Amino acid sequence: QVQLVESGGGLVQPGGSLRLSCAASGNVFSVNVMGWYRQAPGKQRELVADITAGGSTNYADSVKGRFVISRDAARDNSKHTVYLQMNSLKPEDTAVYYCNARFEYRGTSSNEHWGQGTQVTVSS
Image (tube, rainbow, N blue to C red):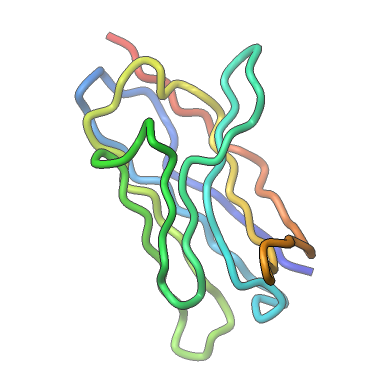
């Protein structure tokens, strides 16, 4: 099992920045992709960005150039952390943001885990 603990959400004005963190612990070697999804009221959950163990990144078109995903690992590899730096935030970025960790091989995902979600609200 992999445990995911998120932090960093909150209220920010349009044009502002927030940084989300997600700490993964447990059997972290069972996953090779970590990322962030979001779900706004009345909408489906959508991918925001993800990053592979090798450092390859993928972004939704709506956040390219504004959001940056990164990851690091503890020295003993007991915990991996993924970050989402969100800049130039817009009201349409308002959503619950969920951390995701999974094993992906040849386009097929398995062993998927989700965090509890953290609210991001962009409003003046």
